[in-house]
Length: 237
Image (cartoon, rainbow, N blue to C red):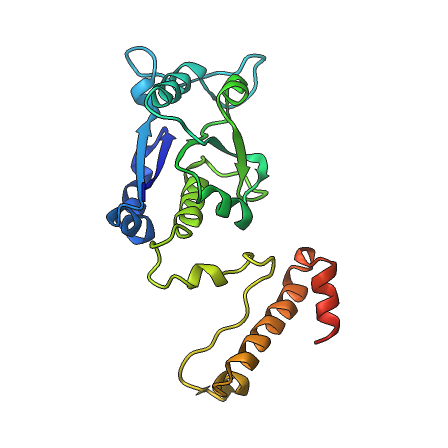
């Protein structure tokens, strides 16, 4: 299987050194299931000081990433291969969720543009970007942390990345619900007991308990995730 290729564009490429040398992304790369390339936007900067930002037209605080370096980097990548999406991580993008991660995990080539400073020149977004994603209603110093979140969420869904092929299939949100509670040994710890049903060995009853527990947890914590069918299911618990 051809690995998923991800090209990440950042003004601080060293930010990714540790995450790519440890953990899931490192494991996936070692298995040749993902091929991640980090590009330093300053390599495409202008002039002696490799400038990548400038003051905004109309005044105001902050700096704006210039169009020339981003166009040079992305167009250079596009000359080498076709990309399924050019993703810009931004607070005003569409919400990144599990369903989106599932779709992206089936792509072949992705570009992720990490914003920095105040903004990026709007012409970058208008001409180059095909998908704008947000990881939440919060403003960070740059798009590097959201880019890592996206890569981790997407790569772990690629078949063969996780040691237990079932573990990704039972995560929260995959069926529209939060995941159920989990317990391990010992069965009694400081007076707290594991639910008897989980010790019964009756797999059908255990699966029913897990489903009901997931429904109840979702109702308590994220009722916005429930639809008419799951609300009706809750009535029968």
